[in-house]
Image 1: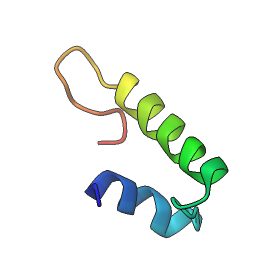
Image 2: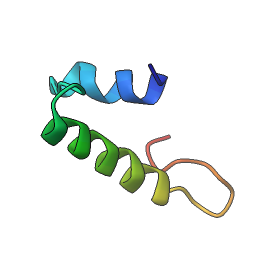
Image 3: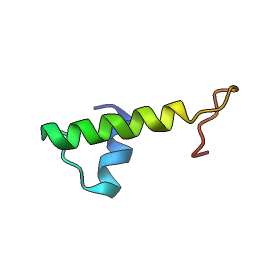
Image 4: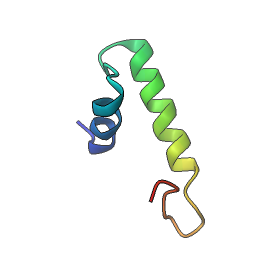
Length: 45
């Protein structure tokens, strides 16, 4: 399992085996990655 997926599912309680929860997790990861600055540092830190 991707570490980023584990970081997201653990605090949120999302179940990646559920199609709806998997879609939410992927969307959240994409949004987080797209928030990265030009220097490649994520907005989260």
